[in-house]
Image (cartoon, rainbow, N blue to C red):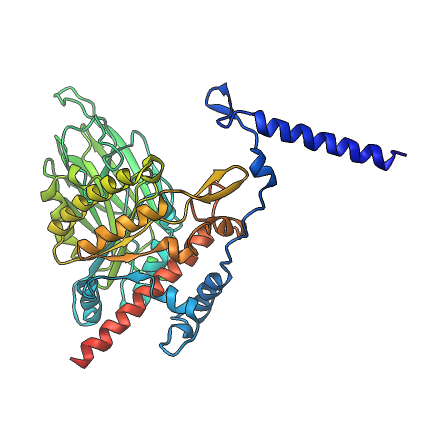
Length: 476
């Protein structure tokens, strides 16, 4: 049997060796090549008491309460003493109280107005797979009408729970929302900053061979039954050197066979549908630039999910302004949601960097406002982002400065601002979301369950402000 004194001495020696290693080990670590760095905790980290986890239980409980009641939680009443609920329900902030009036006014008359209205939800990878957007769409359509998921790319970066898209031969993406694709010599990238083609860019001759391909789109009810109620599909395209033969199948039945026009940058072809599965068969020597399709019914609200992986939102100046405005006008856009900031953080090393980024985004909002002068704009600030410091994850050091700068730009331009960082619980809250399986192990992205809770709190704040708008309007 090992003598207790010897065991204690062995442990003491081990801790002494670890302490000496922590003291002499290079702070920057030892590079092993290939981007691999071997690090050892500093002595202060070994002796440092871990920070207590951020308590997000009240935030999650409120989101669950709202979902359970399928309405705004009772805690949003002016008489409530629940300060957490009051804070979260009022997470959409304003400097100009009329920031969302254009959108709210359109909602208030939508049931007597035969025209549909559009909400465009731009964002980075946080909204991929229709996350957050799907809940906003489901709630708005259930209250204000509208059937269908709205705009869908013919080659999405990732499949959503709402639509599945299967591509045939030759399809490729061309985009400008991270950097402009050098294969493209024009700026007609549509309102999403990207399009798809089934042939590359080439010179067409009489001997050029026509390419045949297809794309299949199906819609599910996983994001709500309203998604399945659409009655028509609009195909948006342009830029082909030649006409393109197009057969459209609604389910197994051939519904239309005709040519798509050549040239232009804002052509629309419309089809009536009665099923939730559709196929386009194309044949042509040169592919059009396909901006996407819209699945809709003609009335109510449509909420478009526009995920742009890797984007910081600073691309609108790279889109043909006339084309951008044509899309916005055709859609009757009343609310534009901009959810950016997270992808910029890794490159923001100083307050000067943050200021420059915010100023650059100021120019983006100016372009959007000129293209959609009758639309409200809601900016969603970045979520908490955890970066590893020693053995713990802490909030990115420039996150709050970035949030503050973007909020100031939003207010300066008459926009509303949703503070997603504060809504999550603020500093170092991402670790708690990861612990609850509501965010991924990268300490950046929400899980589907976490995205639903954020969407619930966002919508609650939005609809609370709408209800207040209607009450004020009735008093006048």
